[in-house]
Image (cartoon, rainbow, N blue to C red; front, side):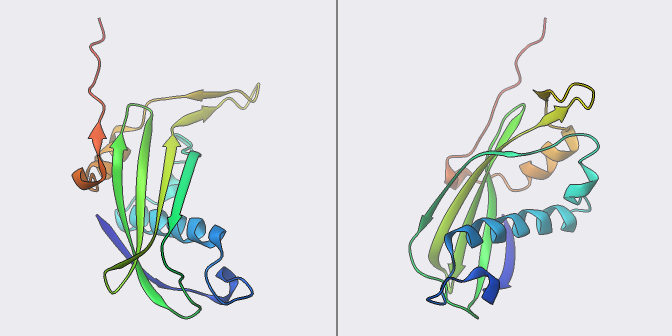
Length: 149
């Protein structure tokens, strides 16, 4: 698991001074980027090899986060497949869960000539980074490699 500490900024709030739903996704993505950067593999360094777009997301909000509140985001990997992975983010204040976000990513390459997109295997280095965050408590799994005959 990776821990990211932050504070809710004005730009992330609604008129009531609490986190706007979309802000959770921005904060989650900041957490993801901080993890990769801390591992010496910033996201921008992967873009010439593979793109990792989010193809599905979901969130549950259990308590509001107010402007100026300091909190942590715990990032874990819930699933690693051959071409995809699932990240789980838990937003916490004093060990109390405030929200959970899940994102499903797929590895793709873009053909610059015709604009087509094709799913491709995750780079091994990227998979090894994800394995460091694999969390059995979130229903985690790694897809078995299929025999290639």
